[in-house]
Length: 123
Image (cartoon, rainbow, N blue to C red; front, top):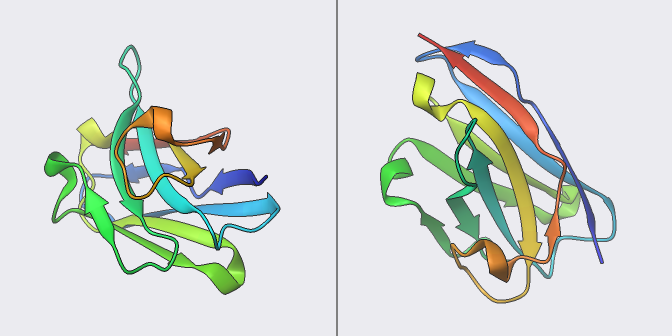
């Protein structure tokens, strides 16, 4: 079991760099696939990116490719999601999640979730 805590959400200008962080406050992430999802107001939670337990495999939602980068540091029990060019449509609550079913974009395949961190991108 693992407990996840996201941080780094803030108000940024479009085009500024942004990094959100997910750290395990209990347990270890090193055996889990880790994913990032986001939820905009009035929208369903959507997949952003996922990374295998070793970091060797990364997958992104088609609309996120080239703009977001997922990475992990198992020694620090932390996963990161970065973008160098956020857009107003990237506004939402960003959630990290841990699962054991391999790199997948399905919410149902993740077992543990953090509480989310709010990202707001102004134009």
